[in-house]
Length: 287
Image (cartoon, rainbow, N blue to C red):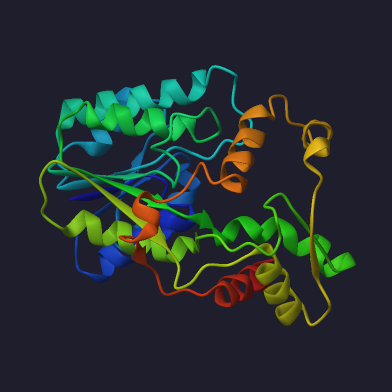
């Protein structure tokens, strides 16, 4: 059995389709039974489990050849990451009780850094997974192209791309969730021992200016990228409803100042196939 957390999300959905396409038995973990019908129709077994429910996760993981685990995204965590710690501990306990042959853990570029930021939760997640002494693949994707879904509305309405990544002409590694899902499904099917890290990026590197150009092409209008002044981030994020914007600000700083980067200058990254233009085209189609 191949068990997938987060299957209703972008990465998890790709994993599920890849596993079923390979003729493998799929167990889809969902939090809302209403969202399970699609995967049941496709031939998957359904397990209902909240991310922090140890007993439900244990039942879902039991008898698995491989398990894909992840944390739900949370851009506004508590200062002590208490909720993330709770979710991590639940996953760790469930894996410890069931001991699958392989674990694939969705992490991120920068998760190996001890610098405090939004990525600290993933640093803790990796540490907890290592403590299990199970074969585990850590997927550390670059900045996700799908993050730019939030930028479609201002680009369409005003021709603007407000960028927290700066300077706007500097390229950085990016990758589509589609490619991340394909690599995750591949990792679940490979025999390996101990821990391994897969750093993943797209076919080339891109800048905010490149994102603006892709949006301009798809939306058929002029779009320009402009860096949002660093001094205004905190009040802006709070005005948007965030209670604790510091971890997000620290994460953005880490990308902008080069703290969060691939090992060995990215010499050993795995390369996906989805281009920025293809990802933006799909996002605009969904919007």
